[in-house]
Length: 285
Image (cartoon, rainbow, N blue to C red; front, side, top):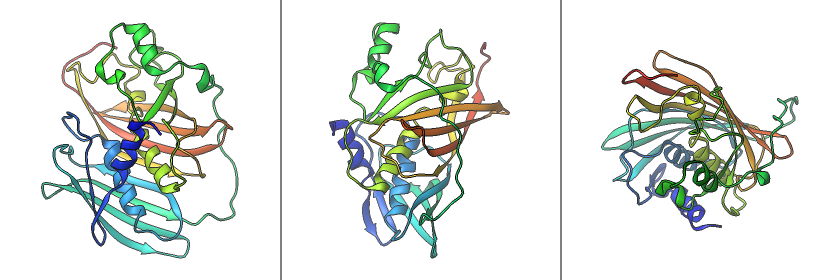
């Protein structure tokens, strides 16, 4: 396990404060607001630690306020229902006495099922794609300090990079992702790591057709909600193809969808996110 992945595992290890109350810490780095994937993953970990039967099969959540990276986050878990097949939890993340994030998560004991799925896209394998930092350095020369750091999630972009002027500008993006090392055999931890990683690039599918950047001052972007469905068991430390697209952006909001396939072609996780796409000044497409 790399040091950065070990740090992520520790970050997701929320502290039990009282029955149904957990505390999450932040990475020691300069941020204007807390990374949404961190809050979602810590909330899911908090919910999962109150569940005795079944594994998470879905989560539905809203980002209500920007998180403050200077203080811990409290996660209050409401044990809504414990059933024979399904268990439901509600989690509210709190800072400064106010809710910043709300999640409902459902856990299910797997049973016999009808079977079908989408076919996995035909893309080059992750081993054929160079690491992200190498590609950024080749295309842009000097690279930002962020790319020089070790990261807990290894990302291998299929095709052109999302920041490249050579990209197709189709509202679609495909990335191979995996944890940078071997994780313990804990299905809840693997689900939380994928939840963390899922918020790293899903919004990029919304931005792909447009000539805007997060830091260019032409628009304000933020995740508004995030929903995930966990279909099959998987390992977050093995390569997963993150196939994303954006059907629409309109009225200050954009929609993005994502599907995670393993290398054998099995669909493991699906997700949908709506994001704020507020235009601050005109920009060209």
